[in-house]
Image 1 (cartoon, rainbow, N blue to C red):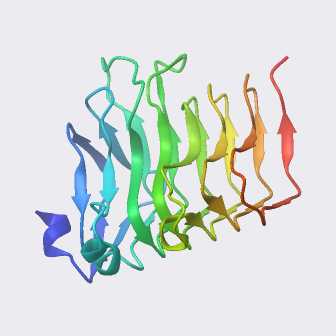
Image 2: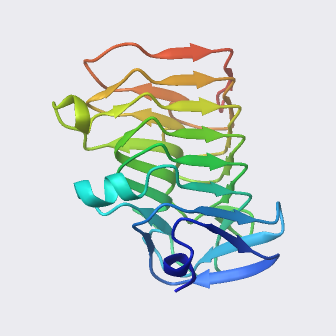
Length: 216
């Protein structure tokens, strides 16, 4: 209800913990902001999405432009089983989305990874993920399900000054029909897979000053 009422405005989450057991769908542009390190979104169900921006239609693609999510921490609620899907923030056919100063922590009790992706993007264009930290997640950013049409690709992303710690899957993954994306100063360590994986036949990827330390 708060997200709906805040369309075109700023929605502030005061310090505290907010438990959700199903996705919060965002279909109009707004700015969501928490109190840094003190506002937590608890995901209360395995395999769930947290915030979902867009619904895959052209209508919401235009309506959600310039949406931003800042200063939120996403964590797993106690007792939730291990997830094999779902993302804290899911982007579904959108553009001009900013994810800034967010923390994604997927462990239960500080040991076992419970949450899957920090951010999952489907046909997302000109989006920014900056100053974010993903710890014990499946991965920090995963793009997927683009198509051959230029308007449907995962294109012109910027991933700046982000950190991935002990993620079990690919830390940053750009899938088929991704193009023209930039990764600046990624820090990734204690992981068994790929720090950066680019799985596309397209071009124009820029990777600048990464700090990558694989798990032995």
